[in-house]
Structures are given as C-alpha cells and as structure tokens.
Length: 310
Image 1 (cartoon, rainbow, N blue to C red):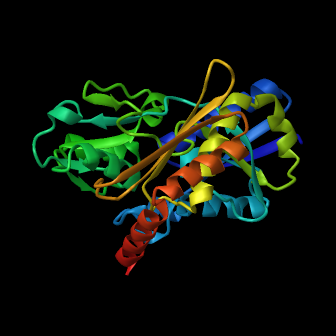
Image 2: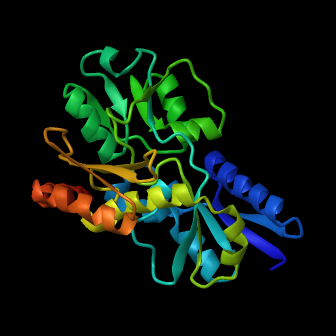
C-alpha cells in the first residue's frame, strides 16, 4: 500500500493520537503517504446526557467504522479504554500500544481527594470513577460532565464544579500541566481496561495489518488483552462500574487486578491473579469476581442504566 487514510474524531486529543500514529507509520515506512480524515461522531454531538444513557462509547466509533467500510479510510485510532470489549463483526484490533500513564487524575483548586470540602461537586461521567470516589468519600456529589478535555477544564475553571476527574494520559498527551492536578494512585482508583493505551482498528484481513507489525509492543498488548478480557468475561460496557489493570512482574508473569462496584460505592468486589497467558488469566479473575456475587451487582447497575434511558 502506498496511500493510507486515518479516520479520526476532531477533538484535540483524537487529532493528537492520529497524528502520533501517522508519524510512527512514516518513520517505519517512509515511502507511505498518510492522510487524516477528520469526522464528528454522534458521541461528540450529544453532550447533554451520560454516555451510558444514550448508547455507550460505541457512539464515538460508529462513523469511523462506516468510513472504513465505505473505503474512505483504512484505519482508525482510538483510546483503547473507549472501545467496546467486542468489536463489530468484520473489524479487528491488530495493534495496541503506545501506553501513557494509566492513572486517573483529580483536578481541583481545593487540593487532593481527601481535602475536598464536604459535599463537593465532582464532575465525572464514568460509573467506574464514581463508584471508587464514593467508596472513599460518600459525601461527594458526583455529577455527569461531557465534552472534550478542554471543555471539561473550562467548566472546572468557571466554578461549575469543585473538581473533575480525567485520564492522566489525555493531559500528558496534550501537554497540559496544571498546578491543581492530583493523580490518583491505582489503589485509590483502579483504571479502566486499556486506559492510557492506543489501539488501531482496521477491517478484518486488511493489508494495513502488515504495515503495523513493526510498531507492535508485545508487553503492552499482552497486558491490555488481559484487561479487556475482564470486560468481555463480565459482559461489561461503559454503563457498568468495572475496572482492570495488568502489570508485568520481574519474572515475566502478569498480575491482573480487577473490580466490580455498586455505582454508589457501597460495595466493591476485588480480585487478582498471576499468570502468563492473558486468555487464561482473565477468565480466572472473572470467576473470582462472579464467585463473590459480581453478577448481581452488574445486573443492578445495568437495570439502573436502562431505566435512566427511558
């Protein structure tokens, strides 16, 4: 292939990610011509409700996938945490890598989580973040906040919220350094599966896959595969408070930690496992969570999310 087109959303972060992948492709294949196709998705347009109430994170990728199906684009670059556990039929994810800081970060002029005032208004549309924050600070008023990184920061700076929570990777990639940023240790807020990593989606059996081989980062891909195995095994989407994070031990084994939580943080189930094969390890950790009663929590959270759509 001599010409490649990358489909991308037009937010500053999405464009950064697409341009970053473009640069890596050109480094590996100087003969290529790589262009960007900017698009606005339904997820970018509908900002008045939490994602789980209007269709989930798939709203951010549908148009990009259509562009690939129609031959207008050859690949799409995503934050892996924004991808569903199972891609639609006909698509594949041959590359996962370029992982940044996996932590969440709380931004507030009031300081860190433990110094926020009583009943502080915290902006977050993530049930995963909400559950873990409320488990530590049940007095907080966690409210939905949508929009790109700059939009959310503007709402914080205008005083609409006392604090907001974002992915540290987004701030790092946009080189946004703020004195009011307080990263949350993963023991405080376990990340979303795939958080901080980029994924490249293509049509199944696309020749683009061959061009991506030189970019492969096996260790990152292995850890993210294990994390996404938690979502897949639990049938979880963005409406459910599920978290997972895998790290490599000195002996090459993976340590996979995961949790399922009540949305109000009143109950959190935790599990972890150690192994070498992501496809074996993830089901083992899922089984631990199910044995503790995770299915009842997931059913209750799913029912609440469906009720909110009506």
